[in-house]
Structure formats: C-alpha cells, structure tokens
Image (tube, rainbow, N blue to C red; front, side):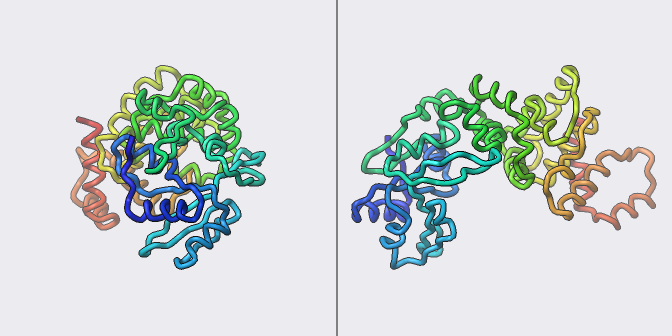
Length: 332
C-alpha cells in the first residue's frame, strides 16, 4: 500500500535516513490517508534521540519544549513538524499520564503503547506499512478497539473512554464489544480527567458527522460520572436518542449544535444539568448558547411587537433568526 507523503514530510523522513536513522508517519495521519481523508497534520516518529534530531535539523528553527517527552518541533517554511522518539511509557499517574518516559529504538514497542488499533499504524515510502495490531483490518471492518487489553488502555489514560466514542462519531465506526464493555466498566475513571480535556473531545464529537453518538456518553455512565445526570429510564433513552439525530442536520457550528443539544434535552425532559455550564466554555459562548436556547423555548404565537423589539435590542436579529431556524429543525 502506498500513501501520499507531502513534500516536507518526505524531506524530514529522507533526512533522518540519510543520517543513519529511520522515521515514519504514524497515528491519525496514516489512518485518515488509508480512509481517503486528507490529514490535518502529520506526526513523525523515529528511533533517533531528541539530541540527534536537533543536530540533524540544526539549520532549522527548533522548538524543544516537548523534549522531556521526546518531541522536537522543526519549523520548515513557517510550518511546525513534530518529530518524536519511539517511547515506552512507564506507570501512569491518576489515569492521566505516565510518571516517566523511556525511549526505545523499536517501533513495535512504540506502537504497542498507543490507544486504538486504527491509530497504531506507521508508514514510510521505504518500508511501507507497519501494522502489527491489525489496524487496517479494523478500518475495513469499521471498528474502534484498543491496542491490547481495553481495561489497561483506559486505566492508563481515562480520556480514551471519550476518544473511543469520538472516533466512532467521526468515522461512523462501531465500538468493538470488549472495548465498549470496558468503557461501561471504567466510566468512573473520567472523574480524574480535567474538564478542559473532556470539553475538547466532546466539542469535536458534537461537530462530527455523527453527533448523535453522544448518546453513548449517557448510556455508558461517563456523563453520570461527571455529574451531568443521575438517572435516565430506558423509555427516556429511546425518544432522546431519536431526537439527537437532528444534530447532524444542524449547521456545523459549535454554538448552534450545542444550543440545539440543550434544547433537545429540555424538550425530552431529560433530567440533565446544562452541559455548557458543566464543561469548560467561555462566558461569551455560554451567553450566546443560553440566549439561543431561551428563544427556542419561547412561544411566539401571542407575542406582541413590543416584546419582539426588546428581544431584538438585546440579542440582535442574527441570533434570534438562528434560534428560530434551529427550532424549525425540531418541529419539522
């Protein structure tokens, strides 16, 4: 299998080989390339030590603030390319990060520490594909599963619980049975993860092609663990899940999709705290979403011109029109 390498990425890999080392693109860029999706960026991994990377690219501007974890940033034509030494991670602290990082010269050891099989694939144009954990097979099967034991992977980094669901949303994949069971089993781990990290993953999920998959955050108990809800009945799930399908028809804009989500929650009488106020969003974002939800909840049949003018003076016609347009999706 041949994967397209951008000119500067190929230049970096070739330069590593010229200096007696090896280097591969790895992770999401390989996954997306195989799926025919244009990668946003390229992660490069190598058996060279950080000091060797710095020496090889001494003629370029270097960013070394990630050197402790083996990552060196090389700036080429104003673009940053991160090159990371193969790593073996030690014992993890607080289900978040490893206490220490040990470098290795074996790419298989590096791939073994990664989260999901579909992200544990490496490639260069000299060796080809390295896929020790059958990630390509899982891409073909459209399955998200962990590398090795799912309990171990989720206990290493609790954010992986949400990342599994996020990748299933982005790619329209199913979550492999043992991996999904482990998410249910380990949902409480999410309490140890910062709200900022959770918010980032959740926002990506809401903006994915399959945002309705956020139902799994409720079903698995992940949202329950961070206090967003306490209990939802089985019947309550059915209508709620059906309504969540509306999200993918909304504009691919975080404010509008989050406002629609909060509106769906209220209309379905789901006993849930505001997600916007529980996770970490700016005050401006919260105000805009909150206003949109309030105006979606208003009954306009008997509203007079005076009240309409008051609303327009407060939020302006643009926000009000967005709120009414979102409400139209719900009542179609």
